[in-house]
Amino acid sequence: MRGITGEESRTKKGNIALNRLLQSAVFSLFLLAPIAAHATHIVEMTVGVVGDMMTLDDADLTCSGSSCNLSGPVVGGSGSWMLQSTSLFLDPDPSVLAITAVTNTSAVTQTFVINVTLPIAPAFGAPSLIQGSVSGSLTDTSSATGFGTIGFASLAAVTGGSVYTGLIDGTSVRTLLDDPFSIAVLVNNGSSVIGPADFGIPVRESIATATTTDIGIELRFQLSAGDSASFTSVFDVIPIPEPNTAGLVGLGLLLLTVRRHRRA
Image (cartoon, rainbow, N blue to C red):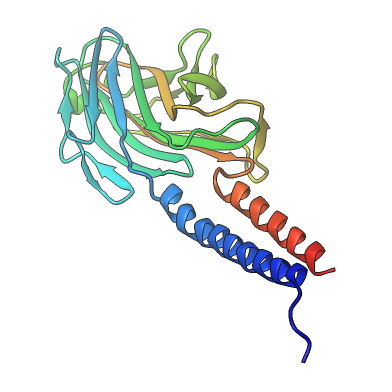
């Protein structure tokens, strides 16, 4: 029986070490992917009218898993506005879905601002794929609030602005329902549909923007006295390639290639 030469021994040991490294890389691929996909959710929401804003976070909302809800209506410090309800659905991919309803409890038209921010980890570079949408309703509630004109309600984008803005690191990357967008209700207790409007559906749009700290949605609009508005808004950002996973897959492929060359 022929003995094993020194060169063959070194080759065998090298292959064993290579196999162990490959197994470690594959194991890391499946281990790290769930960690990235289940990053801790910390959401912040600012809501109110210009000059009277309020900040809400996890401590103010009832959160469970990937969703956060408002336990009851919130009244602004001046008493001139009310956040009727909020439901937030968060995904570390990252993605934000916000369902909100507000009422103008003053005698004048006011500019409302609703901002939902989702911090992200890990950060990822450009490019990214984005998609988003907004829809909702405007309702004449003057007879219930005692303010404004019964049988009339209006909602409009602010001059030079947009009702919906998708944000990455606090900077606008896409808008919907731009000025001069406006709608009205001309029936007592009547409603009108806002939108729907969207981008990146069904084909996501590519943007050359890195995402380092957070993504978010801002709704900004003028709402008539005594009336109510509700919105469902979505903003979704997908990194290309996804962090961690792409690097580990590449490492695994490289190790497989090296192994094949050694066998040849």
